[in-house]
Length: 178
Image 1 (cartoon, rainbow, N blue to C red):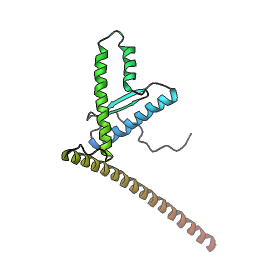
Image 2 (cartoon, rainbow, N blue to C red):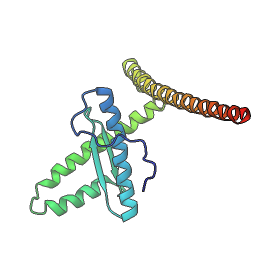
Image 3 (cartoon, one colour):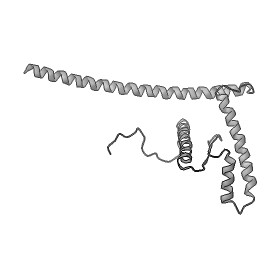
């Protein structure tokens, strides 16, 4: 016990985050954490895992251990809706919606990487450019904050070393004066 504690915030009050940027940052971090945990659970425990997340903007994020999310959804349906024969068309429709959404997200990802820009009109290109600029501002702000934090730590350490050096000089003068 008594080991160093990682820098964390401790317990977080579970309520909606009012600040939009903080909410988006928290969503991204926790979403990535969930996706990572889903992957780890599938590998470590050989479990079939399906995770579906929709952001407030309706963006889809998913993870599935099977080659197709539909297989896991079908397995889920057969376990829970055996008596309901009407559930199959709903799940199929939902799957088609999700498949369309995934294709859209893949296209968006390629666009963000600067690929397949030909089909985009001027307005869509401007929106993409604005989105990238906003992301870049967030990245630069985080980088600047980390640099400032490091600089503050270095200045604090420098002051501590100067204080230790001052004390040592004082002790040397006292011993030579005796």
